[in-house]
Amino acid sequence: MNRRDLFTNIVRASLRDDGASETALVVQAGLDTYTTPLTLEDVLHVYRRLSFSVSMPVAMSHVGKQASVLVDELLGPDDPGEPLPEIKFAQWLDPATQKLVDYTENPDGADIRTRLAIEGWWKSNHRYFGGWWLGGMAADATAIERLTLFWMGHWVTEFSFDEAYMVPQMHYRQYRTLRKDRIGNFPRMCLDMTVDNSVVLYLGGTFNEVGKPNENYGRELLELFTTGIGWYTEGDVQQAARVLTGWKASRYNDEPAPKGIYTTWFDANKHDTGAKQFLGVAIPARTPDNNTEFQVLNEEVFEMINIIFRVRPQAVSRFIARKLYSFFVYSSPGSADVSVIEDLAAEFRASNFNIRPLIKKLMTSQHFFDSALRGVQIKTPIEYVVGLVRQYGVDEFQMHNWTYEMDQIMFDPPNVAGWPGYHAWISTNSYPRRREYARQLIDKMTDARANAFIKEFANYDDVDKFVKDVTIFLLPVAISSARLEFYKGALLEGQPDYTWAEKLLVPSAAARSMRELLKAIAKAPDFQLC
Image (tube, rainbow, N blue to C red; front, side, top):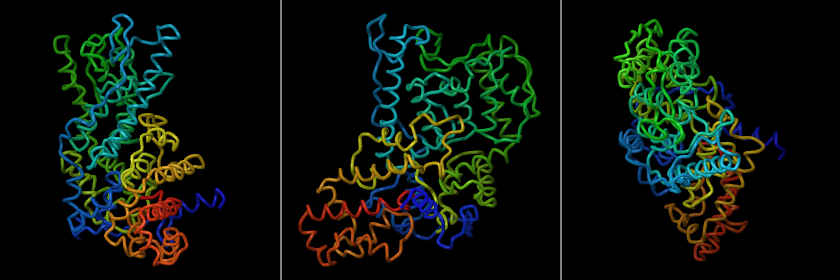
């Protein structure tokens, strides 16, 4: 098969059997609650979209439940607690004190050897952090890490940008904040991110001062994070920049850090105390006496954010509803059902912009469970890499390297808009690496693990039922009888059906056959879909 045919097949595999184009996908169901007891296929659909796939025994334990029960379990508690295992960044040997610390001097003023050493330390910790989080995703029995990943892709910051680097410890703090806020109140999340140390540095807030405004974050807050384009003027961007003057990021031990290293702080002398007019609403001027961090944070910054939600509630609710829909349901540009987006947006507004009710409404809806919306998403590299570890039950300690080779570098999207996603995830570079990753992971499956995997399926001793059940587990939609026969041939290595019972008596033979079946399925275009 040539490259053009290969990628055409992958795209076609994401379309419905009726040949309808991806931009004309028709889904009849709306947001009414899906009340049918969950089938195995339903459970797997929820886990593929809201988590990072699941093992067969865990999936079977949820069969027969209501969707609302499973989704509540996956969303987890409002307070997720501390992420585990504890992160242990490599430390830096402070040349002045000869002690190991978590910070350095500013490398811009250092000699070339010291600068390269500092940047090398950051890069090493960046790789470690990415691997640490991927391991956390693989171990997460809920949707906590998947939702945090969604918000990290919304409030984008890059590790490498503008010929500079984000200190990984700063990214870790942003990750923890978004993990805490993932299903909370969206206006509060906006405030937390507006004064987050990584965001303040990345989007130029640290250079935003009275008389020298930097408009980057004020623009992105509206365009990329809340309303979308078209709901504000250049004057609103300028006024937002004035509101946000005076906030500083801390990175180095030779720069001010009055609240501690890697923590944002407020410089009252750099704040514009004049009156502002944002989205048609006045924000009063302040005197030097009430120009404190607490007062400015609550009376200007949080007030500006609340103005967005008061004046542009429809725009914000639609923008976030559409983005959630694209990430969790269907990513095709322009294909979101307008009425569904409107209903989701209304739910978001009715809940006072709380995130949990919005996600639950979507993920427990008849719309989400409609058969037309299964197998239409291309797995992101992170979903693919983590999901196979969970499904196969095989450890992989180089997940960060694999996602890198598939064009998704942890904490380092291409720009402030994040990863383009959708068909961009499949390319002549990334697709062969996906195939190779699956092959190597399957080869790591020991005979003991392969035999345990076989027995996770209730009908493992019936070759036809077993092959069908494995395809249900690994592929997003039912396949033809011809394909089932092909996969049975891969399992039996061309031998008659009765030889499966004989293979089961010889663990090494059963394991070899199991690996052959998994490799055959992994080559299918729809193996890349969820």
